Amino acid sequence: MEWDSLQELFQGFRGLGEEPKILAMMAIGCVLLYLGIARKFEPLLLVGIGFGILVANLPLHEFVHIGGDVGGEAGTATGVLYYFRKYLIDTEIIPLLIFLGLGAMTDFEPMLNYPYTILLGAAAQFGVFVALVAAVAIGFDLNEAASIGIIGGADGPTTIYTATRLAPDLLARVAVAAYSYMALVPVIQPPIIRLLTTRKERLTRMPYAPRKASRLAKILFPIIMAVVGGILVPRAAPLIGMFAFGNLIRECLVVERLSETAQNALMNTVVIILGITVGSTMTAAAFFEWETIYIFLLGCVAFMFATAGGVLLGKLMYWISGHKVNPVIGAAGVSAVPMSARVAQKEVQREDPDNFILMHAMGPNVAGVIGTAVAAGVLLSLVPGLID
Image (cartoon, one colour):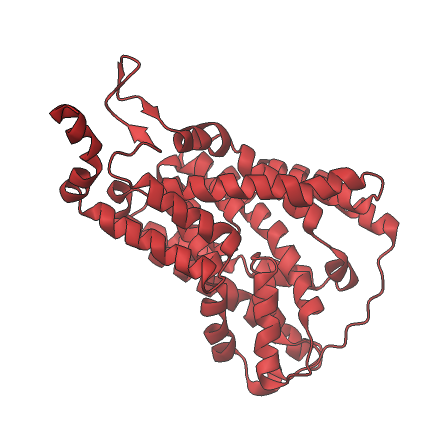
């Protein structure tokens, strides 16, 4: 074997020595893998993201190759994960397909049975606008601030969709921040819930009396949602429309095969591609900047204020209803479905193991998905106009 061939064989080891930041990024990837596998924090996403970070930061960057001469053209980007991003993420195909799958997996009955929970989903969008204002104050431009603020909606596909349109240069960092904090919902939300509610409020029982929304109501709801949402917030029409279509094929009960495919085969496929592709965008060069640190801090602020907004409106409902609404369900207004609803359930059961509010919490939880899509549509409509 010639000396040049041996050198090429060990280029990877030399690359580690030349780029020590790669080791730090690999450590971050391992932490995310640990959280997903050992701690089971949003494993469907964190396992893919963590592994994507690992392979994208390998010294020779074969998974995402940028630079050099490829096919005679200098600086051409190649690599399977690069093509995943270019043709599936940047074109908004994957985020929209995920909304289709989410719609097929979502049961709107808790929200239809208790329509007031829609307001809690709307209140949780408070974090989006707090983070937006904070981002502008730090020095981000309005497009970038809007892309960062939408992290507070706790909806990864919506975050990607918004960032792709408003601030594609921030897509990698915004997407990883969004999914990282979605995985940390069980860590972030409980202290805020306990801080903003009293033990008496958390002990409030809410007997669930399912009124069984009619089949007609379940079929009409996604149709009305798509039409009304598309008219009121045109920029959110693709998100709301795909979400509504997914729910329609679930509830109409005549295309079970399509519904099953959307919920399982399609959803699993796009989640695999999304996770590893989002992770692959987090290279050492992009991560180790103050801008990235600010984005992660603002993402945390967005989640905290989103949770607080839902809980505070829940407290108001608690007093208006004569102590019949448990304010903890407001924390489920962030659209991390169903994780934030489960967090709300666990928090009330810390005080009373026999208290069950999960079905009530699912109302604001699914409403939060719609609320985040609407918030994204509002930002996509207003922000470019304000800049112009």
